[in-house]
Length: 452
Image (cartoon, rainbow, N blue to C red):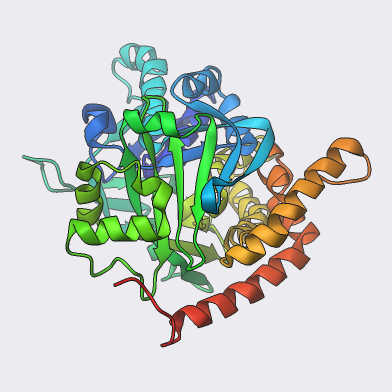
C-alpha cells in the first residue's frame, strides 16, 4: 500500500529524506511543507544564510543517493584543517587527514531541491490520472497537528493565498528545526520529556568581501578567541567571499546596546583586531543592524509517537554549532531511518520505535560533546586542549593500532557513534564542564568589566 508521507520542513534533512523515500519504488508519496519561500527563486546575494561543514557523517549519508555528493562538492570548498589565530599574529594549525566540505546552508538546500525535482520530473509527466509522488509547498506555516485524526493544518502565507489547508498523512515527519511545531504537539502526549537550553553564547553573522580573501588562507577554518568568551569563525565561500559568525556571551553581552558604527569598530579593534582590518564600512553598518541570534539545544526522551509520527534533525536533537556536527547528525538521521526501513520492511511502527531506542543515546551524547569539547577559557583551550589534540594525532599516526585518533578526528573523520566517542573522552568533557561553569560565574559577577 502506498503511504502518504508529509514532511514538515524543507531543510537538508527533510529534503534528503524525500530522496531516500522516493527511490523505494512506489511505496511512498511525499509531500513537503516549508514555511519559508522557495530558496531557488531568491537571488543568492539576497538570501545568504550561514556556512555549514559537511564531514564524513554527512557525506556518507549524501553518498547513498546517486549523484548527490558530487553535486554538493561542486558548490563547496574543501577544507584540510583549522587555523587558530592567537595574539601577535601567531597561529595554531590543526590538520585534517580527511578533508571536509564548507558551503552555505542555502546552497546545500537548493542543490538537494533541484536534484529532487529533476529526478522525479519524469515520474510526474507519466503520472497522468494518478496522484504525483512528490509535491513541495513553500510559504506554508504549520499551525496545528492532530495526532488522533492524523492531520496537519498549514497556513498559506503567500500573496493571494487561499488561507489554511488541512492535509492527512500516514506518516508525519517533523524536520522543522529546533523550534519544531510538530514536536510541540508531543507535549500533549503521555510521558514525553523535553529539555530546552540556550548555549552560553549568542552570535551575529559576518560577511566580508572578496578583496579580504587574500588576507586569509583559503581551505582552512579560521578562528579567533579572546579571554572574555568572545570568539569568531570565518571561512571562504565558493564565490570568493568570506563569511562566518562572531560569538559573544549571551548574558550581559557587550554589543546588545550598540547604537553607532564607532562602537562596532571599537569592539572589533579591541577583541578581534585582525578582523577589524578586513572590515569595510558597509559591513560595519550591516553588522550593527543585524539581529542577535541565540542557539537552542534540544533533548527529548523519544522521537516518535505511535506508528505515524517521527522527529528528525534539530527537531529531535538541536545542538551547539561549536563542533559543526548539527547538519551532519541530521543527515545521518536520514540514513539511519532508511537502514531501519530495510530491517523492518513491513512494520513502520517498529521502525519508529527502534529509531528512538537506538538513536537517542547518540543524539544526547552529541549535545554533551558540542557543549563541552571546547572550553570557554582561552587558557585551558590553548594550554591543554590543543596539546591533547596534537599529541593524539601524532601518536595515532605513529602507532594506529595502539592509539586512538584525537577527539576532533573521531567526530569529523569517522562515523563512530557519538555515544562511544563521549564514553572514551568523558574525563575531558567533565573537566571542561566544571571549568565552563566557573567561567560563566565570573562573567556574571559585578566585578567583571565589559566593553560598553
